[in-house]
Length: 404
Image 1 (cartoon, rainbow, N blue to C red):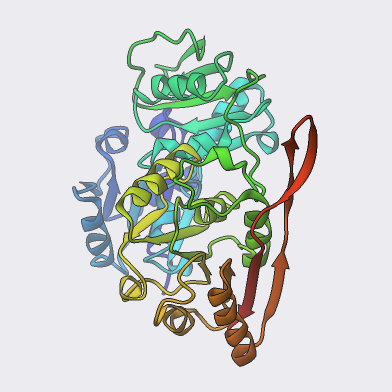
Image 2 (image 1 turned 180 degrees about the vertical axis):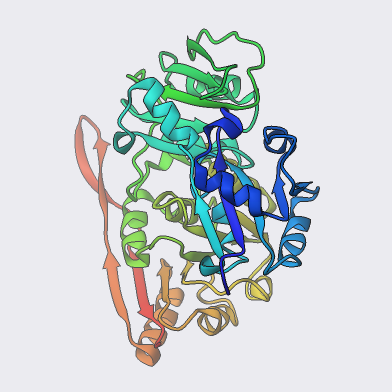
């Protein structure tokens, strides 16, 4: 099919900032879709029918597809393929049916305004996304460009930075970039006292130096145990690092964390890459609350808690790329249900502390192959006026890949 759909990036400079190819596409379109703000930027003599995005937005997709084959244009902010409408529409419409004409993105305009090289800056969005995802990005010396959700976002981020140990972080709000109403507001996180900003803004954050007790953590596996709120049901740091190395998360993959406890494994899985996902299966209500609070505090609020006990709670869940069983290897049907649900080529990792659970893993190793690893970790502890080594309980780690 020919390219019947043209997605046009438009900036605050409106129709006057469009190139001739974008203007020609609008002139030939029978229908133009866009937000009311964007449609109002078009000249009155444009012949195309103007259709504002419906609410709920999901109703727009059948409206667009009903016009397949007819000339249709869509207006989107800046670069439609960077957190934009173009990226969304590629899930429904084949790329060879679309023509995409980008404009400078809000990030490009913000980087130019700040004088920050884009390749040295983290580009983030909380537009329609949980603001807690930013916690993961706060680090000494980090520079962030954040697409705000609305005018309250800068104030919320200022409070988050101060609470995380970055009170001296410098915030710059860039409103209506590229337009006549462009405005710039600067203030440190600790002293931020500005009222609501314009809804259309990009927030630039220079984290600078942190105070000694800052809550900044590496995205590598092995967060300190005190980073998690828990009741003792926690895969300890050294064992967690090895476990995650065996799980080997890759971008876009889904993990089942079965018997998730406080959620440490699933949370660190998601911290490894922004597109990694976790379903944390946990029956204990108190631990479910731990998981939710820990996931928000550590920057992965999209982690999903499945409230229930395996194996029954595993029914009808999306097929996982990897499964971790931190407890329950001896519970009837859990290992079998996990193995059956795992995608071909997927990884299963299970940890055992008791003799009975270790025997279960040895049995699975005999039946399905894989690797068995025994971890024995000792920690220096006071003994009178001296120190000695005290051993933690040894942990058996079983890793197996399902045949493709």
